[in-house]
Length: 271
Image (cartoon, one colour):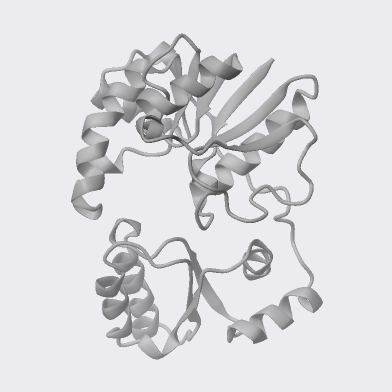
């Protein structure tokens, strides 16, 4: 059987959805060695998007669309599925092909585009309001990453409960505890001290860093603790506003921005 997955989350710097897509593709291919899996994208993939341990039955397919096929979800992808006879397509980031008879699975990570629209760009909110209801109706089956999101999908998108299942996320295979001999050089290179609180994620309003900042300030006011607040992640929408608020904090000298870090460095920080 030939199974396709949405490869677009692996065409940019990898964040949560990109990690989910990569790890899911790896695991499915390893568990079903007699089936063929492919990550399909109309955009070029990031270098080494799948790592060096890619299973033999997992491929990355960059299919550059012609002008008509740039309407990827309605024309380009359905055309590709028809040509290659995919038996199933998994949309790992809330989108699936809008045409064709191929069964589809869709993953919805959250409904913040609908329920917390002020924390997103206006164009993303408009797209989400148009596409989310359309996509979940089109999909054969829906996966959410938590029970809370499963309930929200059923309530706000009017999807019957039997069509939606919550499958919690797991840690990456490479995220195992490291020794201090391994982590100390990373901390020194990043300028991180022995005692710190860690935030890992994109720097943007919807991550609610301001609440984290208020809590961090309270540690400084109400205790004798003086940890660093280490912020690891790429900058996103309205990042200047968030960073400005962080830098104005009374504990601003204890906030350390380390930027977007590799999986190896992130593992060291967690350890």
